[in-house]
Image 1: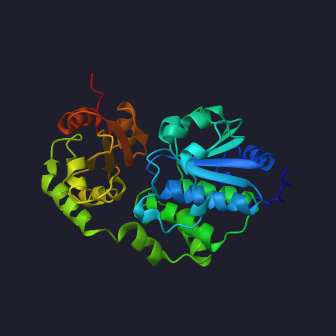
Image 2: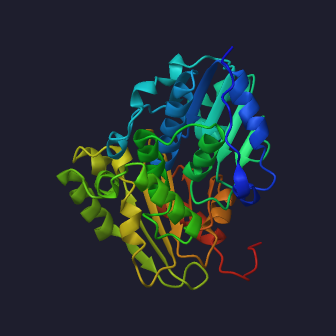
Length: 348
């Protein structure tokens, strides 16, 4: 059995997370010799960065660590700079019934893909997340919808584990924090997030390096796909309660013709959301399985998270998504029907 690590005094920051079972989480980690980590499918910077940060810390505390995510098991090109990827294994190599499984940035088992079964059979399941949906999922839940990123909660867990903040761990946490705050420009960003960013920079993070890898590089084919998506964009000024909707599509054939993998499409919606006349921005991206993954952003006046829940997805009030099949125009019709301005009545 691994010898428990001496804990640092949590200090005054306890008041920031009332009701979260930090003690229960630490007990689970202490009791486990082998820990399996999983983040959501098609991981973004917060999911993979949070998982790799925690994986490195747990390895440093003498745990046997296996980290993975469900198929398609491919690390996005923009995240291949993150340290700790030697701890990643293919999802089929995770134990069918882990001693302890920790899920990161996954609101529910559906976001784990093929690893949902492993989570369901785990002897204990620790959920670390910042999505409002998914209640009842997990033995112990460290979930705060007010947190800007799962990385914020992982940083606190690492602190309570008494682990040092190494440069590699800080790099992973910074990638997660920067990703889910939109490089600190989204309304979820708080003064505490800037304080955390400062600590991560002091630990050795180079923000220019992280920003370049996350947002400022792409193959030429991506520019061609982006140009096509922008050319197809449609502005509906009367939609979204009269606040405006802008949307576009990227079919599988569009990116296959230019050799652009699905995981490189994340930044397209950031271009659409610049539209002055639209409160809500939407990109319908066709997956390799020919479903449509619908990414949605709002500027703060419409809760797109609630709309996506109605359509089988989820997320935050200003950033959410759902998956659907069929024609994109029909998908947008269904979305348009559930997008409501504050104070408007629900449709019959």
